[in-house]
Structure formats: C-alpha cells, structure tokens
Image (cartoon, rainbow, N blue to C red; front, side, top):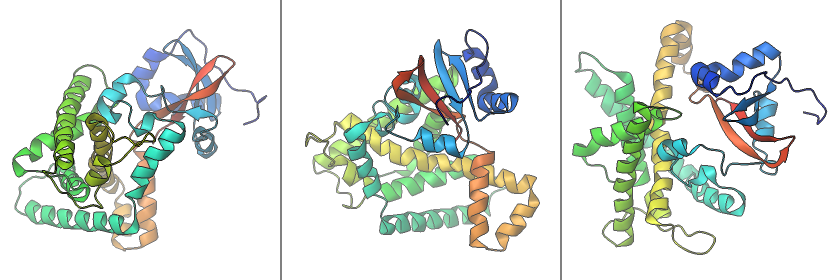
Length: 314
C-alpha cells in the first residue's frame, strides 16, 4: 500500500472491549464497513492497524518492517506459545532457532509423521467400531497426541494419556481467553513444561536415548548463537512448540467433519479420491473455520504513532 494511501480510522477512544465482545468478527466487520482491507483503530490505549488479505500477509511477514518480540501478549505466552519461544524472537537469533525447527522437516521425517498418523487413525477407527458414541474432538486430540509423541521421540505412558491430552488441549483453548479458561490453560502449561523439562534432563543425563533424528534429541542438544545449550525450560518450551500444534490439528479434523456434515457434496468429492480436491478442501476448511482471530507484530520504527499491526486470522 502506498504511503499516502487513505486508511480508514475507527472513531472512539478505545475499542478493546468491542474486540473482546466481537472476537473473530472484529476485523472482518470493519473491513466490510469501510470497504477496505486495512483500517486504523485503538486497542489497549495504542494506535493499531488491522489488515486482511493476501497483500496484507505479504507485508505482515516482512521482517525488515515488523518484529515479533513484544507483540504476543504475556497471557498468550503463558498459555499457548511459552515465554520467549521462537514465535517471539527476531533477527539472527530467530533465524538460528527457526533453522532448528526446519531441520526436523526433512522428507524422510515428514514421511514418518505421515506413517505414524495413518497407523494411529487406523487403530482408532477399529476402536470406534465397538463404541456406541464417539466424541470426535476428544478422540482426535488423543490420536494426534499419540502421533506427536511418537514422532518427536517423547515417551508417553498409557496412564498419563488423558492428562497430557487434556493439558495440551487446554493450552490451545486458552488462546486469547480470560477467566477460568485462561487459568486452566496456565496450569496446563506449568504441568506440561515440568513434564518435558524432566525429559530433557533425562536425555542430557544419559537416562533416555531418543533416536538422533527426533525433535526430542535435536532440541535437547541444540546450542544457541553463543554455543550454549538451551536452558531446560527453554528447551521444553520449544519441544512443546512441536507437540502442541500437532495436537491442535484435532480442531481442524473436527471442523472438517462439520464441513462435510453441513456440505454433503464435499464428502462425495472427497470420496472420489482426487488429490487436488482434498488439498483445496483442507485450505478452505482452514479459511472458513479460522483457528485464531488475528496475529500481531510491532513495527520496527513507529510511524505516525502506530505501534502494532494485526493481521486477520490463521
């Protein structure tokens, strides 16, 4: 967008309460109202620009213009991301940490993830055939946690499956929440970080020997730009950043089932086994049933008193 382009401004002193009440619809409501993909408002006492669309996404992820550090509210870090995780970093440190995650995404490792996923879903389908009722969201979260731990090299005992599933689910559910949901997510993160910290220590002490190509091994032995191992807390935060998003896929599984229920033609097309359509279905499900209402970043140089940028949904 050109520097002298007109940006609609929302009138009023502050719109934080309106954001909390409208949630997901806050940005799209105003984009429709102003017939614009970008507008200015005030949230938490600061001027904020909200934007939506493909061009907005391209601008939003320009690291020369925006930074992640300081953008994610502390409440989100205390539940969803973890404090000082890769999502909150910038510059060379962010690039170095991101390379750790990308090193785990080799074709061989992704093929293993796919194989584990198929195995676990086949086991679940056999089990469901003997059940009178299936709560898909709960079942999908449990399946995806099994997949995540198996792929990451994380030991998961049967007796703790429910606790770990509920905790990872609560952390996701607490995203942007206030009140009981936030505190449930906060306690879930404390328990989960304690669990994973202990596992990191066991790897470093030689008590656990995960395969060298697993996230548990890679993160336990990862060194920062100062050639120092991550603290056990930081290593736990980043390993949870592997586990949690995989478990969160359960929401999209549920959204996909809802989409097929509400739009039966989609189920027919999916059953035709056309690969391109399945990809389109997944992307449309992600768009139609967004997981988060927006993501935020801070401008590197404050322009006309504007500190923060929000991009719609993901």
